[in-house]
Amino acid sequence: MLWNTVLLALRTIRRNTLRSFLTVLGIVIGVAAVIAMVTIGGGATVHVQRQIASMGSNLIMVTPGKRLGPDQSSDIVLFKASDGEAIFRDISSIAAVAPVSSKSLQAVFGNENWSTTVTGSDNQYFRVTNRSIRTGRQFRDSELRAGAAVCIVGETVCKKLFGGQGALGEKIRLEKLSCQVIGILEAKGQSTMGTDQDDIVVIPLRAFHRRIAGNQDVSLFQISVQEGASTEKALRDIVGLMRERRHLSASDDDNFNVMDMKEIANMLAGTTQLLTSLLAAILQQQLHVLQPDLYRSLIFSILASTSFPSCFQSQLG
Image 1 (cartoon, helix red, strand yellow):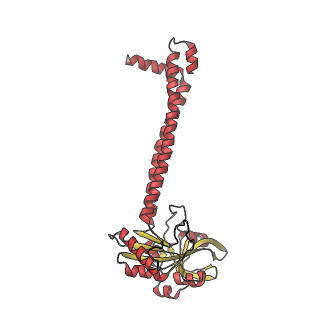
Image 2 (image 1 turned 90 degrees about the vertical axis):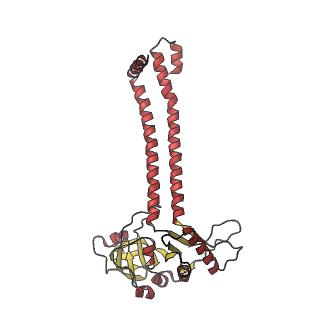
Image 3 (image 1 turned 90 degrees about the horizontal axis):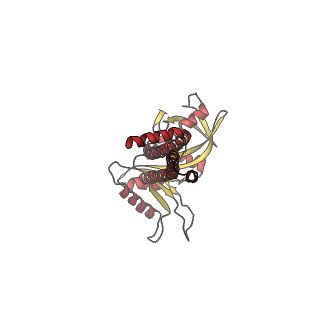
């Protein structure tokens, strides 16, 4: 009986070769698409986690401003360098604090120019963000104190301005500031958000304040927690200290944000997994849509090989 059924199925497939081929092709494409989407989604999740991890070990970011809501002001009170010094001094679990101020500027060398991000910070910036110097050196303490006109450039800036020439010792112009290149950063590639992490020029924070910003404001702090220390406790301590320094009462909302990059990584990974699941569900639904066509094709083929009335065959077809 089973052998007869198999022979009947094979004869039916040969008799309706095109219909059978198209049905099988649709199913194969659908199954392959589901497998591909799940695989790509898993890879994207791992990529997001690696990119966040590359930003720094146990990284915490402190930014000014608060989430807006009813009866809330949008005024942003920026930080001062002393806020970062207090965080490093008063919270024992902190390994490093990097003050960061940035601005998009045109970098010029000879006839070449390139729009890039100029960041004012200190040597802790390289430690917190896991960045190393490929060629050259970091800032000297005397250069940081004096706000010297020196800079460390990313790989993208180096290629755009200098091409194949040596960049060390050359001077580039950032608006009114002419600074000497003392180092070139190791390449890091694109971030999770799609930004080029090598499109950067780092200068001493004091030089940024004096020659570019014209004020003493700090845009944000990037903070590294000591290995083995509780990130959650460090977050609570930072919030308490910043509220005290900003003279916020118990009824006042925070006018700053403290973010753990691990939480951001988990959130982005969860979002990627959700999108992957939704796409896989859509593709699976398409497979379910194909099933009635498959069944109809099989039934029609079986009936076509029997003496079933032709009027019903035409209705099924």
